[in-house]
Image (cartoon, rainbow, N blue to C red):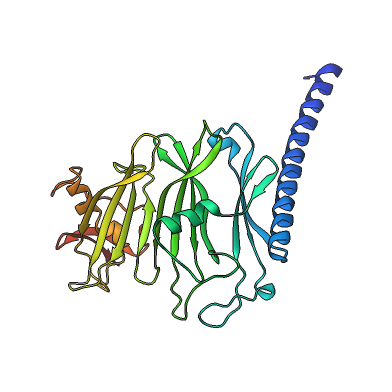
Length: 297
């Protein structure tokens, strides 16, 4: 029979209580931060928003201070803003919280719009949909973390909106987050801005957007980050993927062999790049007229 001394039992119980206290304290801190954000937004807009996202940034970025990212949405029924279809839409506020002090001014986001001379209709804010808010990694072995935020402006009558993709890096010297990549485009024509999370282009950003003249294809751009600076464009070309061609692959995936070829990372006869999200109905990948193609069942 295995027995335990009284001291060992007490020690084990103490460890359990300590672990429980850590979880409880973490939950308490999260609740307090969320409430601080809600109070800040209530004072700013006169509407009680609801927290829809809370990300701890302290651990993945190993920050000096305690940092969090919180997104909160105004209830649609309490908003006076309407989309192109006449539906009331509550704005989404994006807040960085240092220790217990929220910054919901969205100045870093709006500054990028000003730099690119992008304007939008005035209202409670520029964001009405949040597609992504997560920590991604631009280096091997889950290194070089970045905060990715993908959001959308108010949609028009046709459902289109301005999709903004932001990547934030942590500046350890200044103990703050700053934008290192920004892109804005529509969403109705298979446009996409994607951070590559594996393979030879790990950490790069690929952007695909439609041309305005025939033959109607897509421009493809590749951005890379040098050292700890912002992303810079290293490639731009007019692809062969056509509008409505029936290919089930995303434009970035259909153009991947050509993108890699132009960067000296692929040649005819090499294995075709496998998309990170393969359509379930694909049986095999083939090349057709310079484009990677998904053949369905």
